[in-house]
Length: 457
Image (cartoon, rainbow, N blue to C red):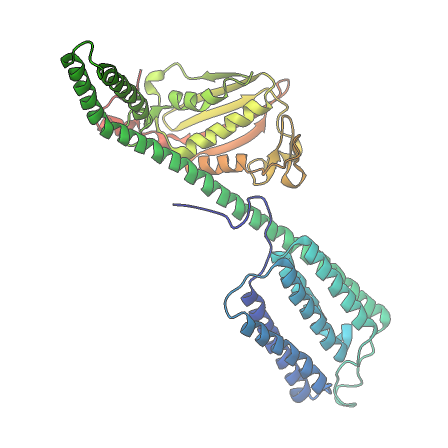
């Protein structure tokens, strides 16, 4: 399985499908035509019918031209989508100019293009479209043709709304554009962040699974090549014995024998990497923790692993790539932020398995404590946590803020529950508590069913 993203992780991508905008515009054209027909012929209100239908027909012609020029589904760039939505705002403004301006209840439709932009386009584009919508609303509030109304005596004379009321309508419309635009953009941005972060998690998990598969292939290759190498070694030794001491090919045959032995030694090493039925495919939790901790023991930070005294009840856990990556990432962060020491305490009962990782660093910033584990909350360099949009390291590079999110997601997939807290005073530092229901990851029962001991001394 191969996974990829259409753009770099952490880089926001904006755009709309052309087909989506065309369908929405056809819906708008249908609604505008229906409103014109109802007002003109069913309600009997007087409209500049020719001009109104011409404005609607222009939108229909544009839709047909876009469809004919782009028969297939195509994703628009941010700029292309912005121009099309800007046209929709101008077209609505033209219709409102012909039908009463802000006194027309349909002036609320200025919100629609801004809302569409907020959910799919960049913040800059949404702001520009919001300003354009507010400006058009102000212009049709100042200059417009009379509001369509019935003839004198049927519903009374056409209402004359005071300028202050029209100004209030414009203010309410501008506030609604700003509020709904910001709210819709924030919700859509969180959805985009979560989607990209989950895609990054899948990429990491696929990579770990691929590496695990390579381990299995290495073990299989070692097993298959062991027999022919042993045969080569035996034959080479027999040839050395059968040749006279001063034979010119004796040295070459001895070299072949030495290289064959070297290959066998390499293959014995590869065998230990195997998966499936290999002895290290399932390990006690103490060995799992040591496997996770060992790469981080040479960075000047003391790492202590504490286990309960009753080792005979120690759980047996499968070497799951996602679990190993998740634990490794938490340990790596603890080492990065620790001043001098990281403590890893494992404990278990008949129901739960718990691993607590603490450090003596500055701890989590209180204002970000509730966001730890969310995508794009990042640290870059020791003692520094911030949102992805503010993260810049000493080398000028920005962090993606996906490490803890990926670790948390992979550990939760294994059945874990994670808690991120700061150590209570007078101690200082961060503490990450990871708890699994024992029945989800302890496979010692399976080993016993196969006739193997539950633990390894």
